[in-house]
Image 1 (cartoon, rainbow, N blue to C red):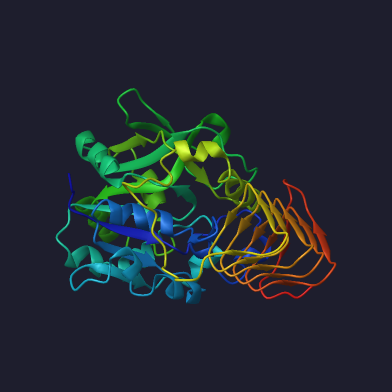
Image 2 (cartoon, one colour):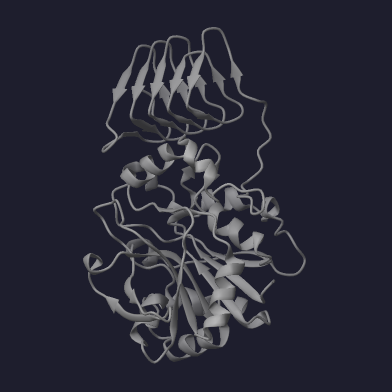
Length: 371
């Protein structure tokens, strides 16, 4: 069943974990992932797959990479006369407050999207999770609950030492019993997706419009238990990205055969991304590739093992790349050795160079660096 809903994605949300130079000039939303995707592709695709044809994206301070990736929304079939993709301005304050996902000031400033479309529900999402959420099931759960808001969660523990999430206990009726101050008290991990009745949303925004630097989620918590808030448990694949450690290990996990048994990449709800037509990867001479994901446009002459290789990467003869993530347009010179490293876009590694990190602390090389 298709529900009358619009989507709103916060691309300005930044975790308070350590990402080094990876987020120096981009938000988490446009961080490359899995050899071809960006983090925003996951919530955006989930909304489109559920038939949501109006999606607003709150842009970060560093918005160039977001605009370049999303363009008109054509890759997600959102370049429409009615509805479609809306890139909306976010506040500078949000870039300095990593806890903030949906600032009241941003929602009030861009409230026209809520007022102009006759919709019953608003689906909110940040870009912190790698998952393929069935938004229709979440909306169905919300409607059946009769509550004013529904938060999506999964039982389990966050791997990262840095925690930036909402903590709550759930009653036997599926509703939230209490919100908690400490993550140690619960194993319910908020997945950054929630649904709110549009009438409830507008009432809260009208009442708290002067609190521009307040997160809307905090207002939901503040008005609890005046509001009835439902909790929808998610039992499929979902991984949060709150640090470099998370980013590295979730990428590495894509090469595990068990990933094919999950719903992350399923034909019924494809994860869409910006289309970039390039020639297939070319393997030359003594090239060896084992247990790796290699994107199109690459030229491989060396050895690659257990690594994620993005588009248009050149790996020269005699070089070895193990347990690493090489982003777009990387150049690896002859006889170079890379192990447990993350190379950002347009990085050049010279002949005979060696870089080594570890699975718990991978070495990061900034975009455009020549070594």
